[in-house]
Image 1 (spheres, rainbow, N blue to C red):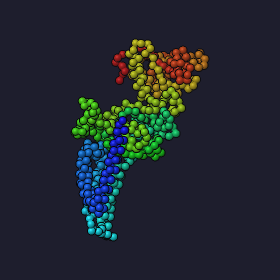
Image 2 (cartoon, one colour):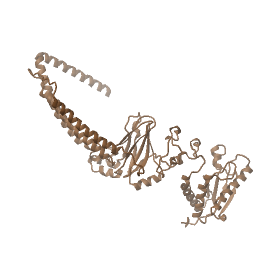
Image 3 (cartoon, rainbow, N blue to C red):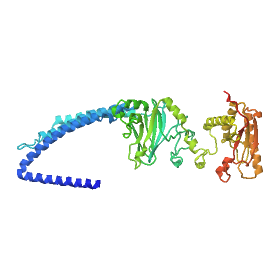
Image 4 (spheres, rainbow, N blue to C red):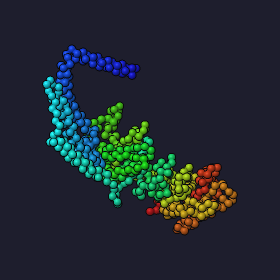
Amino acid sequence: MTAIIILLCIILISVVLVQIGKVTELTAQIKGERETLKDNSKWNAWIGLVFMVVFLVAVCVSAYRMRNVMLGYGPLESASAHGSVLDSLFNVTLFFTGIVFVLTHIALFWFAFKYRYKEGRKAQFISHDDRLEIWWTAIPAIVMTFLVVRGLNAWNQVMADVADGEEHIEIEATGQQFNWIIRYPGADGKLGTRDYKLTTGNNQLGQDFRDAKNWDDIVPAQELYLPVGKKVRVRIIAKDVLHNFYLPHFRVKMDAVPGMPTYFVFTPIKTTSEMRQELRKYPEWNEPYDPADPTGPKRWEKFEYELACAELCGKGHYSMRRIFRVVSPEEYEAWAKTQESFYLTQIHNKDGKENEDPFWEQTLPIEAAAIEKKLTDDVKAAGESEAPAEKAIRLDNIHFTTGSATLTADSKYELDALVNVLTKFPSLNISVNGHTDNVGDSAANLELSKQRAASVVNYLTTRGVSAGRLRSAGLGDTEPAESNEKPAGRRKNRRVEFNVLNQLPTAEPAS
């Protein structure tokens, strides 16, 4: 129904305009062509003069009223170190182009008014005027030279890369339809290498996990954090179509082009909390965030720095919004410590990822600290529990060469961690138990499990653990942890566990 009403209104307006045109033609015929020309010229000239004044006033008033929603003014001053350079450049450019705009706007309508049609007036033809040519050539050339030089200086400052050895954080932003994948370096401070040929559904960035720098890289799924006052270098990449990495409050805007990596360097100078306090000073930011909930939080309380895509990259373009939270260096470090390695949590030794994990069923040096912490927590919980089922602790990172009791080199990480745990808990006594799957002869499996348990005990004693605190047993395939019907289940059944044999005093672990 609404569409029909709109269509009828359009038809009605068209009819009115046609009738006005007919009335104008009849009036011209009655008054005569010359008189009509004089009247039209006069009215057009005066209307143009009124428009000139009204339009200039409207431009000035609207610019003043909207100053607080334009970048660089009011509450939206730059939140990055380089942003003031760009804002200053825009202001200088606006000053000169504003002068040209006002003068040409006035000249256009003033000359249309002054030289409107009058009987007897003839146009004066001026073929050439050297002075005018010099003025309107020299002045724009000087202004343009000034703007270009200033622009080049701004470009050199804003687009300068980090110097060798300069302290900074490097992150990576990969645009795809329709989200940004952000990658942070781990504790080593370095991003690992990538190879697009390695891209899969599980490894969307094509990280080459043979590169040790990739082992601790972080890919946060939720809010992103940056430390205030620290230089950030962003690698910018696209996987499919053209995207644009846009952080408006930081004056960061750079295309993400498939096959052509780009970058941007900036330093945040205002935390999210500080920016909120700045916005709090302005009435428009004290309005309810949700108009339907006038008693709810204000707009300034819900403010966040946003990452957007400034290219129309497809139907889901709107969903490429990510939140960047700028915090103190201490808060950033605390957040970084809570983040987990993408490789270790999503790929390494995970079922179904065998073909993508170059270190399948191997333990890496980077896992040593986490292994020891887990063992410490497990031992403490088992030592304090009285339930027999909670006394068994699985050693997931001990491996043997196929069909033998020879420990692999990477088993040392968990075994050394177990040595440290036994040192922390000097009263702890354990029984090391070997298990196998059901492949092969049961008697042979039983003997192999005994030998493997004995190998673990031997390693511990050679590292200084008292033999009186250790026992060993082989259980073969008699106590499977999972079904032996599938390879994944058999792999989990080939394991070494230890049982905590005694209750631990509450005073342990030892310092």
